[in-house]
Image 1: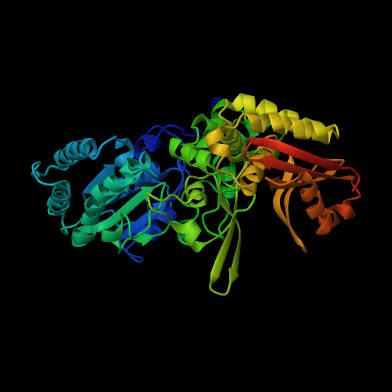
Image 2 (image 1 turned 30 degrees about the vertical axis):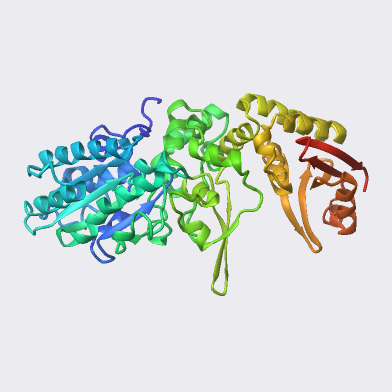
Length: 524
């Protein structure tokens, strides 16, 4: 960090620490006031991806209800809040609660609740069940306040479950947490305000079935920009950092801002909301004055890797309805839903068709797309990321030098590395999905399931000079793939460009687990 510039925090998650140490706080208190002023309700849940400031928001709320006015000097909420009233705050930070067994989790939570009781100056019976301990903590804490109420803040509520997603153990952890979190509903009268955050949004018949009065604001327009920075907030709060980054890159501040938008912007948490920049990635960039892939420092979670190895996801066709975007069960993962909730996908467009609400999702920015596709391609073939990038480079280079035979041969090498237990389970769409990921890793302009007036093209690829149409067949012939392209006039899509069009038909063999046939038609 250059002396004299704004201090952008990347590893400070407590509001009090951030304010006292002079780090830049992008003021979100006007939005928080919408939640805490008692006009919309008292119990809220918001899911957001990691590294978006959920813990900082929880810490800010804690300081607000504890009446630490000096920390809010100059912020939007300071003149609007009644500082004469204070409430004791129960803060459950579940971020460290990842254990292999329910017994270990129970022991850790017991110790945690005892610690909170000690901090708040109340006593609870440590021999009671965990839900009962939590219930007594809420009641005893509320009784210490002037109006008989307390505040309950739960950060990363889903962390105990994330290790078990899509495994038999998920049910046991879910059954354990369900009555524990349900206490917040049954003792609602003792709570002035309740706020729960996490990455995953589980359905209300699952972990939150006993907390059905909880207001889910995950996709609510009111809080769409509560986490992350809008364009205006970046420009307003970090002008010196933008200028310094621009100087390092040989650009002005606006040029640096344009790069930041391309790399770290694009997250949208409501169809009509402004896009927001990832705050941690922005802070890391200002810290080292370089545009970097900070997202990749934390790899794809293991449960996602295991899932995608068994069932490749078609990243080229990401139009979903409300149900797919909303929630899932810990034992039954919806891959697109999970990718949205973990920040790998975001809302790109929205259509209302009578009672049907359709969302088109996509990668938010270059940082996330690059990280995800590199890791995903490595998952598919069981190789290191660097190996798959090298193979992908050969694939794309073949197209750039107009050598479709070399293109297919490079893909043949790629597919030969895929484990047999994966290839045995694939259909045409799975092979197509893998090809799409490989091409996008290098940044090639590739389309998947491209619509025409007569059908859908499996894959299209455009370079500066050429257009390629690729059709995939499993346990069939490459000749039939070419015939489908020709019969359905898929080439019409590219005629206006004037570019030479090459047709590539590829057949995959289940038995041989690789490319079994190829037919190429140049200048179609």
